[in-house]
Length: 475
Image 1 (cartoon, rainbow, N blue to C red):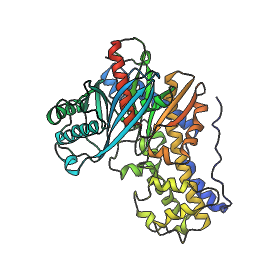
Image 2 (cartoon, rainbow, N blue to C red):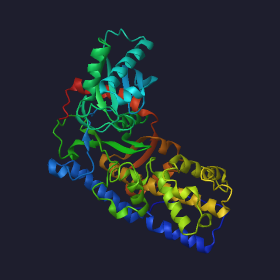
Image 3 (cartoon, rainbow, N blue to C red):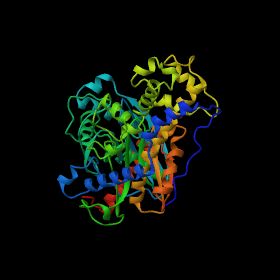
Image 4 (cartoon, helix red, strand yellow):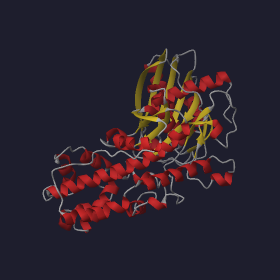
């Protein structure tokens, strides 16, 4: 296989003293992700996938992955017709989407709604009552409230859940801003249908499929590019879904009709919680984990995701301050300001080009370091931001290579949604460095499927109806 091509790294006219360069290398060297380490990460990831796909429940419990059957097998083919609804619930703001297909071309209308704090902390029925009323409001604005035919609705429900059927899940826990005292152990589709019956009886909708945001992102990517077979969320957190051949799924219990594949939700953010990635976790990742909201959980995400990338950079900078490499050993507020250097800050630092340091100085101003920072200090801060960013991009791209290789196609597109991928100026190119070496038999493309989880939900409703017509059985 070919070597990983190296992108042009940060180049400025600033030349560090030999002593500072040696000290910088001494900090960055031990946390460098080498080709051997990437290969080990991929091997560990594959093992977790295999464990999670076992027919033996006790074996599956040893995996950090869920490898969840989404029951979605049909993809878009360009012949779609008619109206479909998408509902995307994952935070305080949610959206309702109308997709009108004509000969495979989608015209999309979206409206956003906001849940009140009272809803977010009250009974789950209050959340779903408000959603039902919002769907009714949306249909009214579109002139569809009296539709004689029920409109198929796909529901993106972005909370940890167990998938039981196309339109049935069990909620495992509320996350983010949701603090409802009940609803756990319940089916979100059943709760939505009960709210529709309770608050908006005779609403002309049929909830035909429920999924995670990763799955709806894959569906949105598949609309943009029919070669899209992997969906990736790369924002605050991280997860992936991919189209897996059913012949590769040991625990598959469905039929073997065409199409002989199914979308699998990997649920990979917690890879490493069982220790399988301990060989490559740095002291900085371990310290970050210790002071995070969920110590011992979401181990994989903590190497690169938007929630954590800024803090990883800060911890490396703090070590350099302690070593006397930065700011003459006095980092002021930066040393004690856990979580105050954000991934947005890192993205801004990475946006400086050439000898420009305007955005880097603006970030340092938050910590009262902008006026005292020397040209050497600015160059080191920029180099650390790039090093940690590229390191993270390589890690996530390596496991994407594992999924690409499972798809077994000559060309595969990965549809990506999330602010980290969208806004970081170097993440895309750094990820692309990896695929030639680790997926040598596949041409890999990365595309942005921005805000795909609403539109993708409606696309999944197309899949659900097609499968019903064909009598496809997924379990």
